[in-house]
Image (cartoon, rainbow, N blue to C red):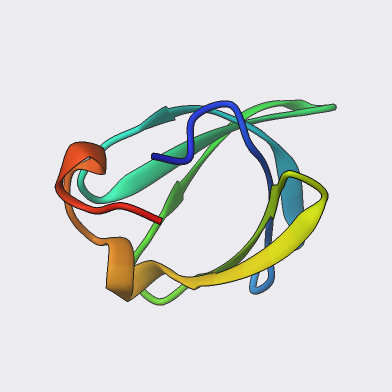
Length: 69
């Protein structure tokens, strides 16, 4: 589950805190408002406990509780 973590989307240069997640999308709170990004075809860098974890959107294209990072 990515909710609450800081993320960067490499393909679109969007970054912020994940506030919601569905099977196909991630909602990110940015300085300019909330952006919804599709998982399919995007790569994410997730800041988890001061470590950067690279996540491929296609690998987590499922409901948040169906995968574990």
